[in-house]
Structure formats: C-alpha cells, structure tokens
Image (cartoon, rainbow, N blue to C red; front, side):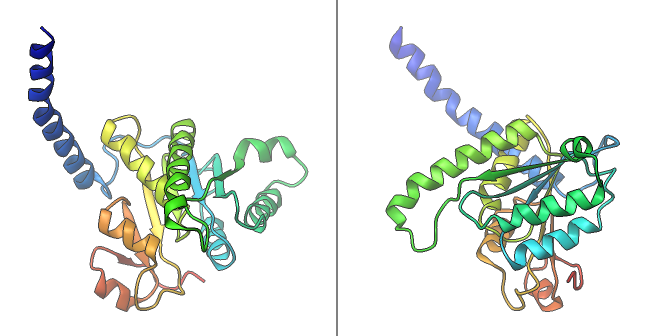
Length: 226
C-alpha cells in the first residue's frame, strides 16, 4: 500500500508542475494589463525605500500620487540602512496632515526588513541572511497584501517583489508592481532592475533615459523624474 501511494504521488508530480507552469504563464500574460474588475476606491500601497538618492527619487514619485487613492501607504526600508529614509517619509507624511497624529497613523505605516546581503559580506554567510530576508518579505507581503508596489532600485525590493509574484501564482493576492529605474542609470540597468526585468516580476518597468528603453524594449521611457 505504501508503494502504491508513493507511485501515485510520483505520477502526480508532472501534473502539478504543468499546472504551475500554466499558472505562471497566465500571471506573466496578465501582468501589466488593466484590472478585469474595478479597483477599490483606496489601494493599499507598498513603497520600498533605498538610501540617499534612491529615497529622494522615490519621494518625488510619491509626491505626485493621489493620496486619497493610494492609502494606506506602507513604507519599507532595509533594517541596516540609514534611518534617514524612513525619517524622510515620516516627515513627508506629517506635512500632509498637520497636527492630527491619528490620521497619520491611519494613512501611513513605517517598517523595516532584513537585508539579503551586506556590502562586503561573504557569499557563504549571505545564504542564511538571504533566506531570512525572503521569509521576512513573504511575511510582510502576506500581512499587508498590497495592491500596488512602488520600487526603484534597492536590493530590498527583490524578495518583496518575488514574494508578491508568488502570491499571484498561488492565487492568494494580486499586486501591481511598478519599478522606476534610477536616473543615475544611463547606459545599463542596476542589478535589481536587471533581475526584475529578466525575471518579468514587475507589471510596469520605467526608465528615465531613451537609450535604456532602446536597449531594453519591454521598458517604458518615463522621462526625467528628478
């Protein structure tokens, strides 16, 4: 009986793999298209912050959003990054709603996530930290269930986007992922951008230089955002 059950389990593996491949193909074809159902009045928005120039660019993008449309906004930064990124986001959100801390808490949340790899960290030890970062990212995505994700380069966005893509494949949630490559990338994509582009994990991929759009035809030229 045990051998029969094992044989049945083995024979079902090709079917499961085929179903998974079909589901992945569906998600890839569906990504970037308008939603089949009307979107809710407010969209939970996950914003991935880097540091320095990346944060400045992202805050410029967020400043153009319709705040009542993209709410609540969840800002995420790497745990070991400088605290200036989240502080800038907090200052910005405070400027939108003066004097009412309750409204600020309702409209924006601030959190940190483990980094996959530190600068100079050995590749052997980075295996453990990468696994930890992926698990943390998956937990955040399941907890927040963002409907929109904005990112622009930090490596922190990779496990978050991968987790959101996995939830799409499993049918547990759907996030529209928007990636904006940094204006500092003139001739080639950043490593994060290249991975997201090659793996097709994002719905819309924007670049700020026309020569980048020519080199990566699936990208969209957004013009200068800074």
